[in-house]
Length: 125
Image 1 (cartoon, one colour):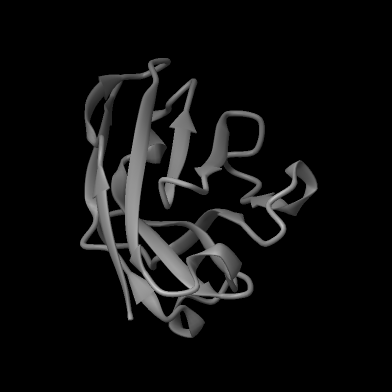
Image 2 (cartoon, helix red, strand yellow):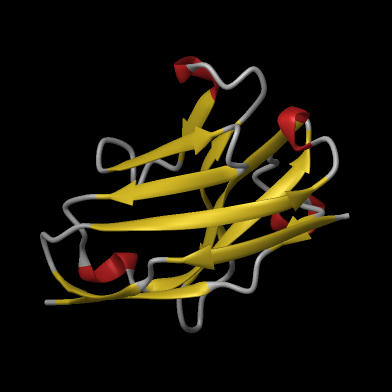
């Protein structure tokens, strides 16, 4: 079992930055993929970013909508994954969910095993 707790959401103006954190507990986390999804009001849950073993820079993946603005990183000893969000836009407003999955994070949210409770990010124009 893997338990995920997000923090760091809030209200920010367009162009601003936020950093989300996700503290994970459980077994075998060192080989789990971890990442982030988001869900805006009235929209389907969508993939944002992921980090997969062996956690090198080229093992990170991003949705096209956030590429160049968001950065995922992981502190392995602390079992924590971060999402640094820069140049935020109103369309980034959503509930952001931390996720974990054996090996890698699939783009299809129904295939993800573990979810955090979510943290709200609101970007005002």
